[in-house]
Length: 269
Image 1 (spheres, rainbow, N blue to C red):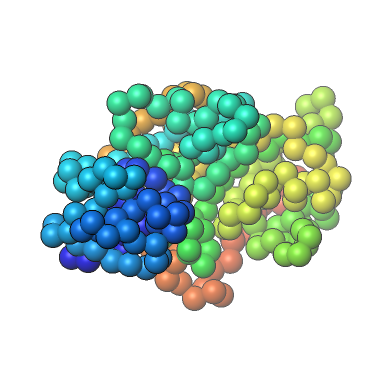
Image 2 (cartoon, rainbow, N blue to C red):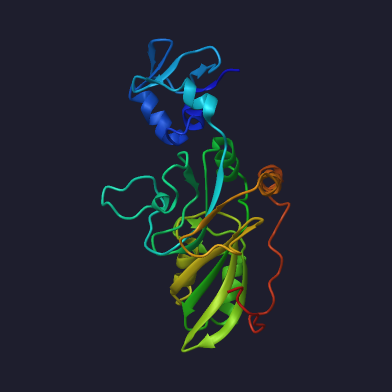
């Protein structure tokens, strides 16, 4: 079956689809001895000889299997596959013999918590192109305690630069201690440093942030810096829910109303 070259290269574990596209346009990919530079070109790995930088990748495709890793990222690690500044990478926390995987989404350098990594390009595309993303739950420690009015603004959505945030679910989960308070924030979109920017906008900067849930996946039993391989049934449930977010009408869902800001519940850990 013919597929786009960038998808084939990603399936072989050599690069993300974006990086694969750069390889193609850079003249590093050939099919049956002819260099291909046009994005969208298709090939059939069962019939065509596909080379990347002169090396045949068909054997890699034959051996490749889809894997899914759930990592509890500590602070001080970059969500990337490379870094010109040689900062620690999230992939440094994984076994060296693990096939090449790429992060699905991002966590910034100083944010802790769950990160999904995989070599499944279809899953990555599904999640990143959904009309509304799989819900992601964060625990945020902020300076001071925002007023109920400020939290109501964040729940409804606020303007951050050129865009307005989608409605979010926000609940205080721990009473103020030493002038700071903990909140649980559920987002349905994926914007860079969104939780930090939201609280900055109401005058209460985030001093600690961790992601504790991605859809049906939680951080239970995974210590910071550790990971576990996801079971097929877990992925099946996760993908089913991700498909529902991709396919639903834009207005089909809005976050459920959160309890009043005065109601406090305990953190998960």
